[in-house]
Image 1 (tube, helix red, strand yellow):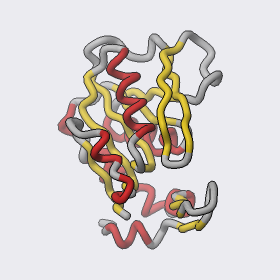
Image 2 (cartoon, helix red, strand yellow):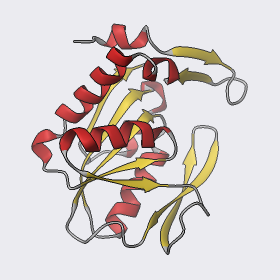
Image 3 (tube, one colour):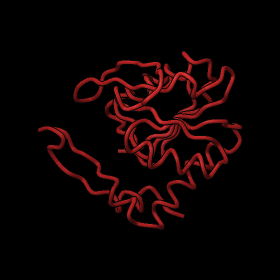
Image 4 (cartoon, one colour):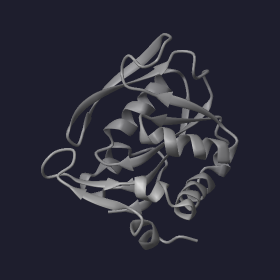
Length: 174
């Protein structure tokens, strides 16, 4: 079983990306390590097994890579939360702030049926804006959000506070 230190040893740190003053934690080096990737998905999935999740929502783009694998592992469906203009059918949207700007996410209007149990799964919890936008989209569609899971949490940015009241778990903390 991987420890937090083991995971951290597989993550590349890139200073001043995407802009000066940001330390970017690049998970592509974790993803290319089969043992680390499998263990990450296993730990995230295990934390959701008892939640009876119908659908996992993965925000663009690394949330696709992690969220779809978690959905598969727990036998749930998977929904894409995309940037504007990427989905072909009618959408709900939500604008939000990031640690270095602002953005918008969209989900197909028919992706979630009222009452379905959903979990948000992404690579990073920073300020919490992306996760909260995804949660609000799901709730707007009548879903019950039963959890939010992240590979990495940047604790100094207090994203967990924005998600107070939701079941939030992370594997790696910086």
